[in-house]
Image 1 (spheres, rainbow, N blue to C red):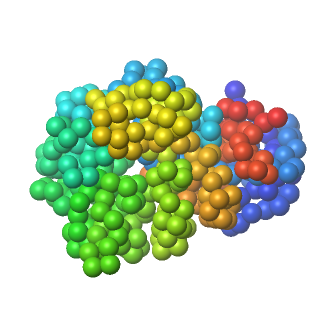
Image 2 (image 1 turned 60 degrees about the vertical axis):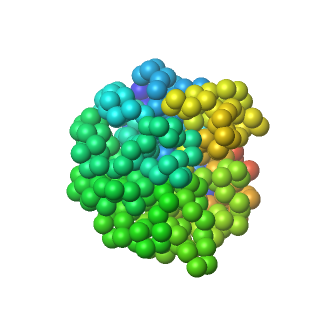
Length: 379
């Protein structure tokens, strides 16, 4: 059981800024505003304490798949990412037959009801064959609102996001349907023009699925979806900061134009995250992971990532030069807000869940706490 704890001496990142020689008080499963009468004090001098990471877009890890695995597999993948600081994770599916996706939604919704995952993200089948990436083209379909509604019903209120190529027939009506049901409509795997993307945002789309990837490039005469997504204050852009999906200049461009309040760092992880190189299945497609880069065996397209959010955090600060505070916003606060969970997670404030990560001076994970209990014990 969780007990009272005082984490003292670290640089503590709060919504208002970093507090040197700060402290975080944990009482049971929550962050408290005043010290408990009894409890242990842990000296974290020389370390950082930041909120637990929140991953909007994740297909698995630890050799286990959220897309096709058993309940035990899903829990294994969730635990793998918790070891790397992700205390809140949305389970993402990939393109499949509608009946199969509905069945998976039923399985994942039970885990969401138990609190093991934060909800479900449907990535496909409502995407463009021109920008399918690691999705099976034969299973793609237009975003008919009736089909979208079928998946929402199967998710029993636990659907959090659906990625659509909104330029396809039914796309705008599906965006409106998702918005009406409080589900994030995300633009991705799209061949939309600038104008079509603006229309989708006006209809209610609020997220760019892994910006730059699986969409037309930024052109000076045909700016495409990237320009529309970056310029609109209503849109949060997902970025996969693993050094493979994005050139550092593209990462900096997105962060500069969207600003720290409109970026969500994600993993788009598949089974190999936290596990190793080898052959894997992503839905019905075979993937080879070599040197930690996942690509389809047939065709060579990038097939998700092997990223964990601790690596994305470290890279953002040490390679890309982001401030720790801006990185925390992008990796914790912003995705928590998008998911409607910012009353419980995403920042270190009294009353919220005691979800936090202890980092050393090199920004490597030294401790992970979820709801007041250590997943990774410091020292």
